[in-house]
Image (cartoon, rainbow, N blue to C red; front, top):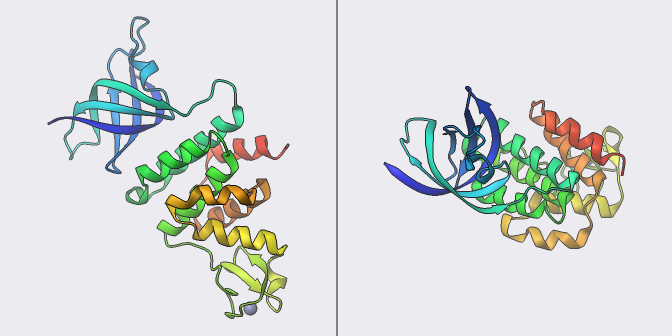
Length: 238
Ligand SMILES: [Zn+2]
């Protein structure tokens, strides 16, 4: 059945001699690979329409049982890619790779990726830290941020990555002792619902907050990402 549907372009790679294959996250939360016939030919404009990190309206013959289809036509609606901001692009790349490489693909939400792509244009660190927080929640791996992860005491002073969240004075030796402000931000980023991301703008999420969230994620979810290494090397200098 020929279908027109919105999709976020996650990756774009060369395929065969003249073709390009793009991976898209469709608005109904499915991933699909679309082949752009002849996209590498000089006369073709297809490729420019479906650059990575853009929102497109895509028309293709949609067989739900097949993960691949030929793209018939595409219409660019929004692009999140920057021609000048390397931080923004590194953020988009990390969000995209995280969406694509999560084994539980059915938890990846179009709406979430779209909101985080958009937020990456103005506040990259918040965008990616929030994204990781939402992924942890969908995977059922959220840190314990209501009380000590080991004894349920309410007064907490530290975060234990391995222990799974906040730690009280008695158990703090296992984790990182942090300021109240940091603990509060860690709680917020892991609790905040999707439609409230803008509220977090006021808290000034920085590289340290990102690193803490990412460390928690990669400790509990085993995954090696090229985009993560690049992201870290880039942001660490600032
Ligand atoms: Zn405790």
